[in-house]
Image 1 (cartoon, rainbow, N blue to C red):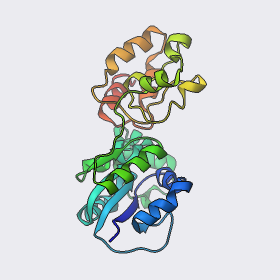
Image 2: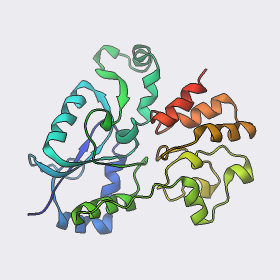
Image 3: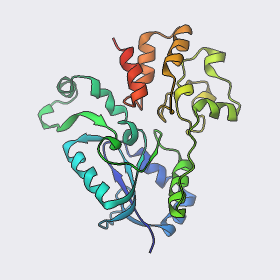
Image 4: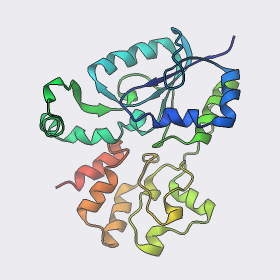
Length: 255
């Protein structure tokens, strides 16, 4: 029997699910290799679990989602979180350190109908996660590698080096050294394919902090280049703002 694949959405923009649909040439091969049992972005056909692999996009932002992820975990042999929302709470996690009721009242004309939690948290805060795919959105090549590896029964070969390594591999000059532009590349896990630095912009940290990220040293260098507290705070308060290493720097420079 073919392995059964399910793709789930929580609080997110659907961009990481679209990455799977954007696999165009490879998508038919994936469909041949697995049974797509649940994937509402692609088909209305749904089949009950258990599932061999579940890909989960989005953060936990409502009480209903807290319950639903528990059931998905019970139904899934392997659970993979995909994207910044699922792995780090996403851009919506910026509300975690703010007055939730005040934010809700300022955004919605009828805030009493909004049942969101005061926090947006990654999937791993609620259930055991077997593997993470970082990014906003995830990288197509990494997604295909993860699916292929699981079908072959091996661990996915996903790089754990920093964005700076991708710049060097691509021959991209360091924007901090050559232009004095603040950049999160030294503390960000690589994987995007060097998107921003190659067009002269600093890395925004879409793939989250790399292991043992030395954010303090980077902040000192950015400050020496003239970056003020607000610039540093906002740079660490992006797509992966609630990842511990980034959240600590954002809070340190808040106010």
